[in-house]
Length: 215
Image (cartoon, rainbow, N blue to C red; front, side):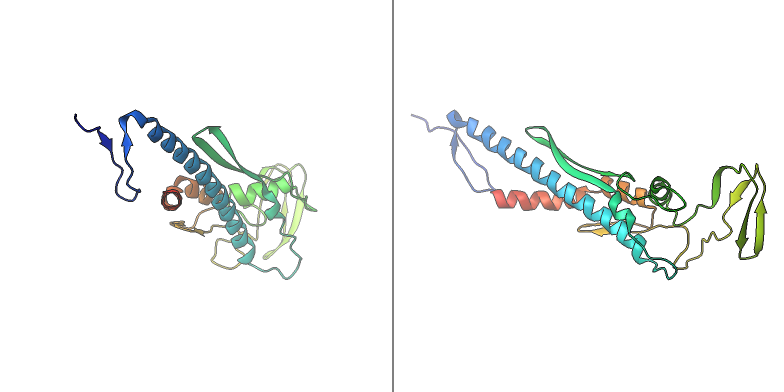
């Protein structure tokens, strides 16, 4: 009589003999591996997204130390939530939510304005210009003396600075999160998008670690 055909798994995996009649064992093992990979990779993605967000905010605050006021570091509260969830037995995702809803308001503006300027537009402090026409005449002391804007005009920030000084108004940054490094300085939202688009460099390393542990 002929011998039963056998299937072999070699390489980095433990060699295992499975008869054709026990082929279901392969599917069971693959399904288990896929489920474990999906869930643990989602946890890793969640962890590193939070780590990247905190790095961005760290860089925002650490690049300048004010002497005229005390910082409350309100922007750390803009990380509203983070979690993982399963779409199916073998598909999981990670998500973080950022916004101003948990931030406290400021004396002269809203938390929403501060978050939007920093995160979306990469602006520290006041914007370069107003977004709408003034409804009344407005005067302000500037580096060049008192300046007046009339109703109907667009306000311009006389202190706006592009220079490479510690408190320049344009805020761009980089982050290093495990195997990922931002290629160049970008505004916060672009840094996070670039990180997510290139997360595979972290995911590949994490996937190898998980598989080696399992097998």
